[in-house]
Image 1 (cartoon, rainbow, N blue to C red):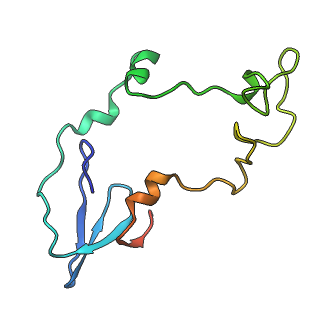
Image 2 (cartoon, rainbow, N blue to C red; image 1 turned 60 degrees about the vertical axis):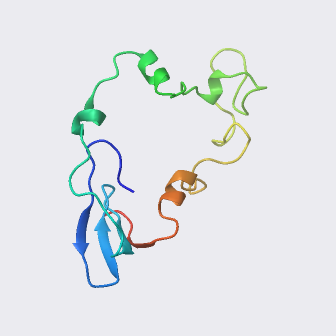
Amino acid sequence: MVRAAGTYAKVVQEPGAKCVLRLPSGAEKAVDSRCHATIGIVSNPSHGTRKLRKAGHSRWLGRRPVVRGVAMNPVDHPHGGGEGRTKGGRPSVSPWGKPTKAGYRSPSVASRKAFAGTKLIQFRK
């Protein structure tokens, strides 16, 4: 559950059958008290603070460049095209034409899967 470099979870309370853990995100999660755990902190706490010196380092990690829709061709994005620099011409939309702002965005699949199957006591402080 908490396996990233330099992370740890704290046991907030252990009333009986369920044990409440505080995760690095600040969320509190109830898990079965019979679950096994490793004591300590995952090594390499400075992993997240190291500088990526060039764009290529991000690419090595599998991160793709972020390209604005207005910089694309109209075949690639609803905001694309036009002569010279232009505004989007319509409200913010995804490359597939779905609205992206003002409450339309939903949590990522990864964040939904992270809390599947266990009871979430409190979601981030």
